[in-house]
Length: 335
Image (tube, rainbow, N blue to C red; front, side, top):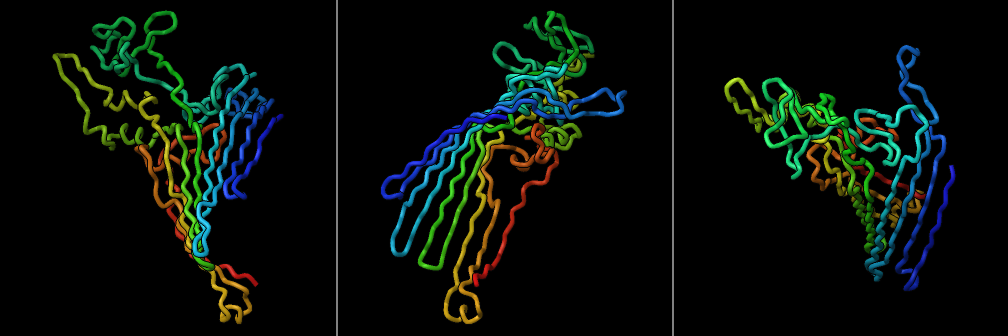
């Protein structure tokens, strides 16, 4: 590995306001990842040096003392971070390595980018749907898409119909940027309140919980299924589950969110009766974590991952328990 890093810290107004800035450029050669092997080898995967990966980004923090009186002190810190990963080269026989369900390692793309099947569309971007008499038939008004009994038949690179579902990049689980905003309030000499908000923005999440619910007829999509019978020909929209569940594009959603990560109240006891117990002070703390989430994601929790802390297979929500809301009450003693 090699890394370049540069940055600066600056403060004004007698340190009441400050900024921290860091830029980095990191490159990893001989990247170690698991590669699939033929089962005839006696093993399913092997760790190999598969190529090179780069990470470039910036981290910025703004600090401010917004209030400073005899009764109230308010410190605020806003942190911004943006990282761009990129697979620079692969030395394996395959130019695309797939992990989990649809996370891919591909040259020129972020590590773990979603790579999967998609809807055929017309020139206006409208989804082309349907099936005609179990045959490869052109959809009326189109010349580049035909359909089959279950799902679309695509046009291959040779210009001929193919039943192989084609794939494309569907977005990345890597966020465009992250933000964290912490506010700390000191009220009087004994009370302290801290509030932390954080979020990710621009990342994608594969909602496989919705996918499996739709496939087995338990999702809300089933209420909207539309089929029109015309003689011996059945035309069905893609709400037909046996067709939709193969099109991963349908289930990749915006995973941006903001969370009220923590609210904590601390009260210090340092009266003479406390000191008579032998302790100099006692700090009582009541804290709540993961109290609320603001997101347009339709699943349970956009922050969870089926594959836990996996480096490549990430951003997949499939029946995974959400991060719990917790409350804690504690006391710390200083002697």
